[in-house]
Length: 361
Ligand SMILES: *[C@@H]1O[C@H](CO)[C@@H](O)[C@H](O)[C@H]1NC(C)=O
Ligand SMILES: *[C@@H]1O[C@H](CO)[C@@H](O)[C@H](O)[C@H]1NC(C)=O
Ligand SMILES: *[C@@H]1O[C@H](CO)[C@@H](O)[C@H](O)[C@H]1NC(C)=O
Ligand SMILES: *[C@@H]1O[C@H](CO)[C@@H](O)[C@H](O)[C@H]1NC(C)=O
Ligand SMILES: *[C@@H]1O[C@H](CO)[C@@H](O)[C@H](O)[C@H]1NC(C)=O
Ligand SMILES: *[C@@H]1O[C@H](CO)[C@@H](O)[C@H](O)[C@H]1NC(C)=O
Ligand SMILES: *[C@@H]1O[C@H](CO)[C@@H](O)[C@H](O)[C@H]1NC(C)=O
Ligand SMILES: *[C@@H]1O[C@H](CO)[C@@H](O)[C@H](O)[C@H]1NC(C)=O
Ligand SMILES: *[C@@H]1O[C@H](CO)[C@@H](O)[C@H](O)[C@H]1NC(C)=O
Image (cartoon, rainbow, N blue to C red; front, side):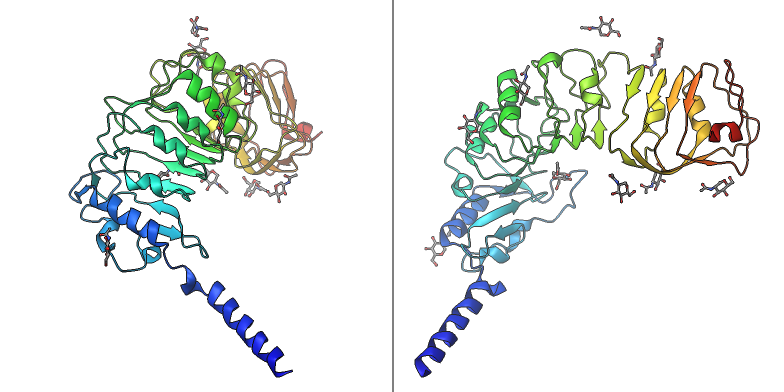
């Protein structure tokens, strides 16, 4: 009986040791690697950058003999003590990452953020493709240049990738093959920021965007070819940034069919920038909030507008100026909440002379 109690106490004790927060003592190998990595750079905290507070580096308090899991920017696995996340954003690291860098010894990394440092690197090392557990890789604004190594396509677990604005003179350059293979492999990629990377060797036909993207930034790097619908209609896309693509050509779509989706919430102003739309079908979505109906008059070519079956959507007709819908022929607002409280002579020309109460039908 007594020995049973002893066993119980022993197990209890081990459990507490194992799961107590203090258990994440840094793995000595990773601690060594981090210090060597730090020591391979000059730390220039005067490095001026729009995004960074000058005078600060996360690595200044990294010291040999202390637990690396408590160092700024470092996160460890709570049992093994291996470094799983490294975020050295704005740490003034200045110098090159050599192929023998101890960084590449941190094989348990799941998240690596080296944004806004100055690696002044003529070529992004192919060894970055060896971090097979990576779910997040962020090299934004960190002065890498040259061709993106094909090994990047091995990062099959990536959920987010940020290669934006690394070097404005010699940007990181995609080869079509690398791009294709990355998209094939990284099937859970949701967030992709490629602003200012060079995509000139990728033709729009082979861009083959993943339908998983939630955020896509192709600022200042439009690939060869005109804007096509497959980008605008990615089913999960919530944020699309295409600004400053000076050579981007192509008509914004004239008709946008988005019915029977689960579009939610605030369809904000963005839809009103498709000035040439002739058809806009947002029916049977989950739009909500209150929309000033006169805004749609910006779309002067609009022939058909379908907002039906969005029963959380309230359409507000109050307006102090006259709005015209010269081309509108077909309008379906059924099951949306039409706010009849006030209507001030909106003119539906082109054959559809109507009024609020008729709309309700
Ligand atoms: C840390 O200190 C130990 C001895 O205390 C030494 O053997 C080791 O080389 C040091 N590591 C680094 C990266 O300086
Ligand atoms: C996909 O990634 C695996 C390793 O994660 C790699 O072995 C394979 O070559 C990659 N496939 C392509 C098409 O790049
Ligand atoms: C990359 O890191 C920078 C700096 O921490 C951050 O502002 C940016 O949002 C990150 N990018 C992604 C895609 O998370
Ligand atoms: C586009 O991607 C899908 C899935 O990643 C793949 O099956 C298809 O072959 C690709 N198409 C082209 C034209 O590369
Ligand atoms: C791109 O669009 C422009 C203008 O819309 C057009 O003149 C040109 O032929 C298009 N190019 C291609 C490759 O489709
Ligand atoms: C709308 O079409 C006109 C002429 O067809 C064109 O000049 C204009 O750039 C288009 N506007 C947009 C926002 O696509
Ligand atoms: C909806 O968009 C408007 C204007 O763009 C903004 O003021 C408002 O906060 C947004 N509401 C939500 C819930 O995002
Ligand atoms: C519709 O949106 C509401 C919040 O606005 C949400 O609670 C609900 O789950 C959504 N329904 C569907 C079918 O997506
Ligand atoms: C209906 O319109 C009136 C007057 O413009 C406004 O006060 C009210 O909040 C609106 N109701 C809804 C549900 O948007």
